[in-house]
Image: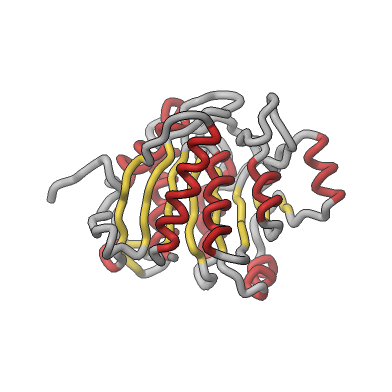
Length: 278
């Protein structure tokens, strides 16, 4: 079998036949600590070939689904230009009645993704797994920094649920309290899932790899101690399997800081499980 390391494993459907479309966004222009997430998509794809295609938990195999990989989105220009490109690509894919799997890149890319979703879905839920609240109004003079992404997302769609959050500045925590934001440092409970399920809306998941403790995901630009274990994150994601998930992103994988590809292989497995859940 020919192995194309530039694509996610077994993503061999054509675009027209695919139910799920993968693409990646090699952008880390607002990274505030350690850059390198622009190469996250490449590392996730390469690591995926070290996995089995079958998920024993879900009892499903990647060979049973139709999905394709468009590789890196060709981006250029200013941040505004790049965000417009991302938004338009998301709209194009959703308009063709397909679901999306997106590899970052840094977390700021979730904002134009959500903008694109908003064009196709009147109402939906965003679920964030992250170490950081990402609720600053601006950071280093940029209102569209990765440190502000969920603040901007909430301006588009305020049905946001945040899990794993254990870091943020004072302004963010005051904003959280003032606005009664649904934010937890803990794992999502079955009660959380039931509440989301009762909304009866499509769900978009955004997974910042730094939701994991650095012991499980050292390859990221802003590691934060005290996070989930890999098993805890997977068990949390399985809770969403009966919801109407329209897509997901996995962001902030920075292979330059990875150790023995721990982070990349974990991200690749997250992608496998979510692709099978979709």
